[in-house]
Amino acid sequence: MALLEVENLCTEFRTKDGTVTAVDDVSFTIDKGERIGVVGESGAGKSVTGLSILQLVEYPGVITDDSSIRLNGEDLLAKSEDEMASIRGNEIAWIPQDPLSSLNPTSTIGEQIVETMRIHGYGDDENDRRQRAISLLADVGIPDAANRFDDYPSEYSGGMRQRVLIAMALSCEPSLIIADEPTTALDVSTQAQIVNLLRDVTSNDTALMVITHELGLVAELCERVMVLYAGTVAEKSDVAGIFDDPKHPYTKNLLKCSPHLTMGEELNTIPGSMPVGSERPSGCQFHPRCSEAMEECSVVEPELLPDGDGGEVACLLHTDQEYNMKVDQP
Amino acid sequence: MSVGTERDRLTDNLQLIPFVEHRHVTLLHELLRQNTARLSLGFLGIVIALAIFAPLVAPYDPADPNYANTFASPSLQHPFGTDSFGRDILTRIIYGARISLFVGLSVIILAMTVGISIGLTAGFYSKTPIETVLMRFIDALLAFPGIILALVIMSVLGPSLRNVIIAISIAQVPGFARLAHGTVLSIKEEEYIMSARAAGSSNFKIIRRYLLPNAAPTLIVQATIVFAFAILDEAALSFLGVGSQPPTPSFGLMILEGQQYLGDSFWLAFFPGVAIMLTVLSLNFLGDALRDVLDPKYDSD
Image (cartoon, rainbow over all chains, first blue to last red; front, top):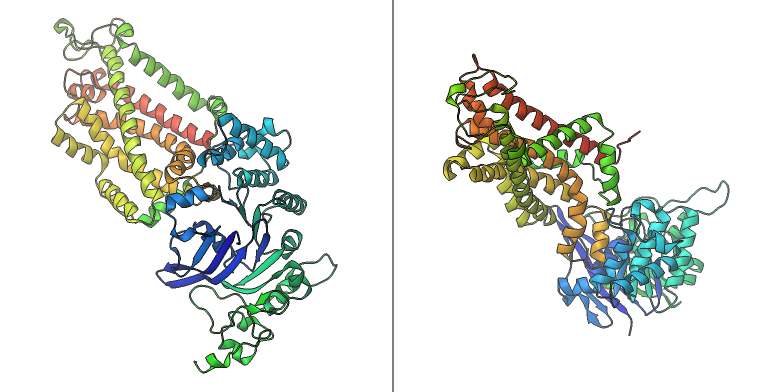
């Protein structure tokens, strides 16, 4: 049984100006100890997918009734707010995007790690929790951890604060860690260190879901990739498949947009922009920007189907979908 | 004033200041580097000491009349002169400081507790009916000028020191509630609130450990200003005759009693007036200095 099973996840923002579907019918699973990357442009619904799992989507966001999220077979959407609170940080931990603003400036580093354990009753007593927090800080590479335990966040650098957030996420030994753009706010050399750290700390049974727009991070860290476009799954594959033989035109374009260290090379861009708000194109969401779009792409919504290489792709070019059935409907 | 612009004004001017423990030590240190803060802290220290030890330091009895020595002008025996009953004005001012400080402190405690509770709750449950009900109630209170509101409450409750405190507190609640509400609204958007939720913190824990400590510096500055307002309001209510009643040595009451003799014996109203002015000025200077010191952009050099 998979650790996390997400089925038909739809998350909508019901605003006065109409309903905006941020996540549209997304299904995926994460196995115990697996590392999966969720990739896409800004606004593709990556973060909302992560927040939906924790049920922390902010007002007016709503997870629709047909959605299903199961952790170890238990239906998370049926849980009460209190039950969810006992899962957050305990079973599923979250590593936020911006380390500089994600720690409480009025509380010490050590206290914030201990606090997470205290909430979930982890550890025998305060001293036990303190010892564990110090060893966690040492594990994530904070030098002189025992002495830096009582420092405030303002006394830590950005990279160190990201390490602290990772230590906090690890504190209750969660089975799944969701990391939202864990390296975006950091400089390049610090990024590499954090990637190595994330790989090390999840080398046991801890599963990791990395939300990112950087394909490089995915290549370094993950075993599987899910590409999101406008809230829908464009392609799912193992890492090698995505980089060696991308199927979906969007994935191909994303790869071309990744910067390489070659002098004078012009960076590729994808023309147009992702549909925003309540205005969504008919048929394939990507077809207005797709260079390989066919006539029927504007009519038929492609289903996510096996691509023959072990992955799945939602594109009419790669699957012999019976779209004729739907073509009749304008 | 619409809600939107008021909220913008609050959040624009707001400096969200990390209020960390080790700054407590340096806070006083930084304060004492400013001349105005040194002066006002010194003056307030003297006022507080005089108020606490009033029976020991005051030369006479504040309520004891001496009909043989009415309207005595300032002299060595009576540095601030005597009033229409021959009572020593310096003594009455020293005892009056007791009342002013007691009213100020009580109002801060009452108005802060109620106002911050309302503002925090409304801010925490923003975009829900709870916020609407609480903040519209505060708006309704704000529709009356503070002193008129206090006057109405006093005429309902009847004149007594306890009722003065209640009336002024009610009049000061909206200020605290609005400030706490605006502050919480902006703190709520901070990433660390989301990480606290993602770590499984309960609502109560988020309010107590995250919202309140981060809002504290802003509210402390407001407290010094409200302290000054409370002293002024108490004097005003007493002056209008609905506050403290004779022979209580309240500053406002002393000015009321002295105003009819202003032409011949100015000291009856003058010295209590100076006492109010200096106390309120000191509190305002202290508030300004605190705001500067708590501002992260403040540079002591």
